[in-house]
Image (cartoon, rainbow, N blue to C red; front, side, top):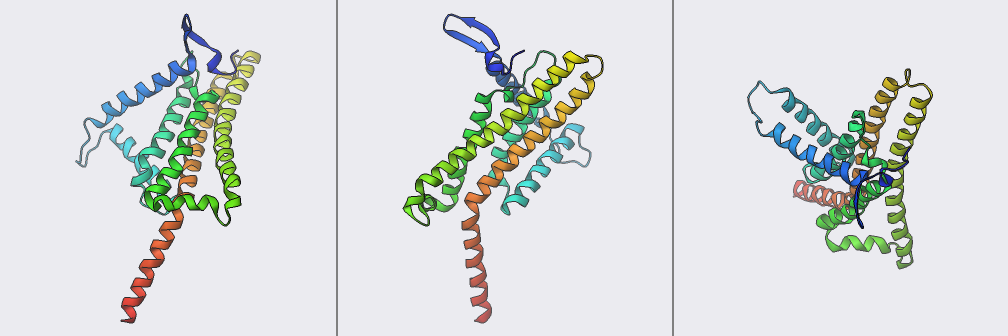
Amino acid sequence: MHITPDTLIIFQWGPVSLNATILFTWCVMVLMVVGSWLITRKLSTETHLSRWQNLIEVLVTGMRDEIRDISSQDPGRYLSFVGTLFLFIAVSNLLGIVPGYVPPTSSFSTAAGLALCVFVAVPLYAISQKGLSYLKEYIEPSIFMLPFNIIGEISRTFALAVRLFGNIMSGTIIAAILLGIAPLIFPVLMQVLGLLIGLIQAYIFAILAMVYIAAATHVQRKEGETGRQSEKGDLSDG
């Protein structure tokens, strides 16, 4: 039994090797690209919609509502990034029902790569809204806080990766153990439980990513609201 798909070598030619993590990651990406093209190529504005368009609209509306509730901001700015994270992790985990497939999210390298995307996205979103003045927050209230703030960002990213990797990897191992003990009793139950855990982990990862981004971009929004409220007060006084 392979604890991580990184150790499962699919093809090797000299120093070049292809492991299960890389193979299945690309399979998921190709499936998502082709699937999104097939689903969205015939979108309609009529009252009668296809089942696929209904599903897409439910997903997009749900993600927009979640982003709006967390950030209290326009979700359009964050939908593409956070939505892609959720869909990639969810599809990767749901494909676990396919025989021979190993979720790439059970590899720490994949989980770390996704967490690193969040690590980079947080300051980028903050700088895009606040400008380079956002970097001053790393030295507030004193410059001596700089190393602690940096350590906090790194540890938060590491925890995000470990959480995803640990939950998916442990679920795969437990399922393999139970299937070995009682292969006639547990298969269906463990498949259903695995799908549920996979969806929950995708949701948690996307929510935490949005929470981190919202925390970095929230200050400017409050200041903007305060300014608009003061302007309204001045106008009403005038």
